[in-house]
Image 1 (tube, rainbow, N blue to C red):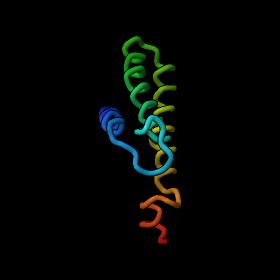
Image 2 (cartoon, helix red, strand yellow):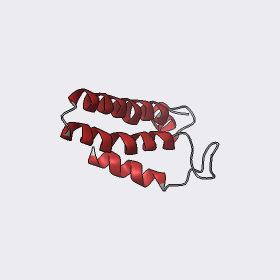
Image 3 (cartoon, helix red, strand yellow):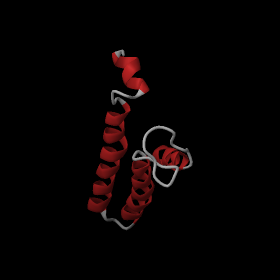
Length: 88
């Protein structure tokens, strides 16, 4: 969780150079970083207050948005890893 939070906070400062941008800096993938930056601290707070169901829901959101959705779009046909794994 710490590494996901760190990588999300670093990615906010990385300028997007591919695809349509908004605010001359961000693209749609940055939304996943903002979800991570919100979900990690709130989930930790839920555990401290013994709200286990809310923590579990936050972790499921983080897992789905941060790993599954980002992983799917990593292998999109216009991306480098798609070309590397599946050929041109």
